[in-house]
Image (tube, rainbow, N blue to C red):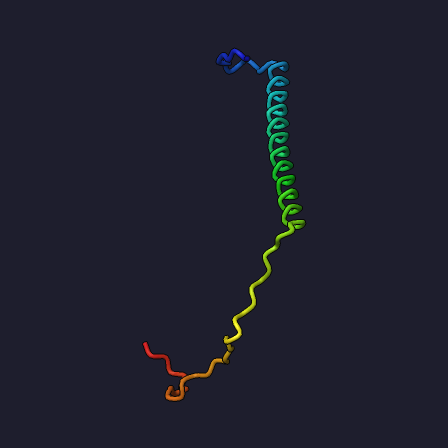
Length: 89
């Protein structure tokens, strides 16, 4: 790796050191993006496989039907309430 030394006021950073730093930064970003993209592809493939297995499943459970004695009613307000717009605080 690199051997770091403290550079004084009048010394400049050598061009080869600048190129090496740029190379390591680009290489680390390339490795990072490669692994991130490969994890994304793995997750995408797992999602496709799970979707396909669920799509072609033979024993699908159907939505249960409501019981025959169940009746729906619409909401009606109780008859003894007043309909005034006063808000009690």
